[in-house]
Length: 235
Ligand SMILES: C[S@@+](CC[C@H](N)C(=O)[O-])C[C@H]1O[C@@H](n2cnc3c(N)ncnc32)[C@H](O)[C@@H]1O
Image (cartoon, rainbow, N blue to C red; front, side, top):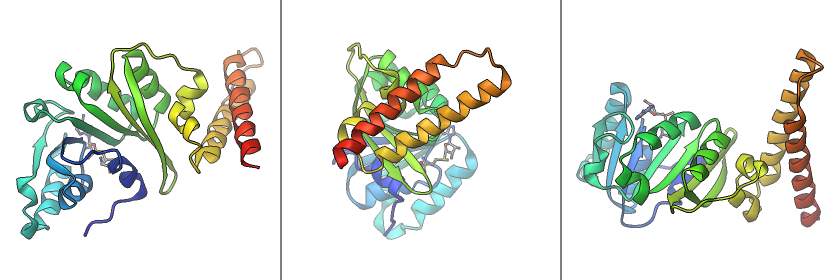
């Protein structure tokens, strides 16, 4: 039986029983295989833009020959969600890609999918850009998780609700739900973000003494306050 990494397990934990899932950028197809073997999803559409990953996915699906996975999993070579709309997925997973690419895939999704499906997103980079896009486009972030494999990964579950959502810069960077839930990785996650901001401030200062670093300084100060507050609660 296939064992998912902590990152993909965290993604899978957001997928509801009997859902119709589109896994975009499936690569090895580990998630669709796991969902099918565990009878979580009724139907999984697994897409990838490249031939190599599609062949790899097909090989992995076929290796479970006697389980009849190819009846549940449909593989499509396509860009993002193009062509997936005919299957009407109620859940869309976009994992293991840069935040900017995830935003582009969501922008290009058919209005029907964008407004009706639950999206489970796991950006490798530019998480802030992704969260800002979601809030600005009236998505509600309904769940978040942190997972650790070789580093901390962020998983965001969201759905369009048409509402205007307000957020702070700290919430955009760390995740409002992550902050509320006090995940065991939260302190480390915040500390990593503070380190990145402080490195950036020092880099700017070395480049030019007149560079305006006030926004970064304010954010680092808010995050430090948040971190100290959490540490205080945990004492
Ligand atoms: C690093 S793998 C992630 C695999 C898997 N989703 C995971 O999280 O383990 C990224 C995959 O996304 C695919 N990809 C990149 N851009 C894509 C696009 N626009 N549409 C579909 N797949 C894409 C790549 O070919 C690659 O197989």
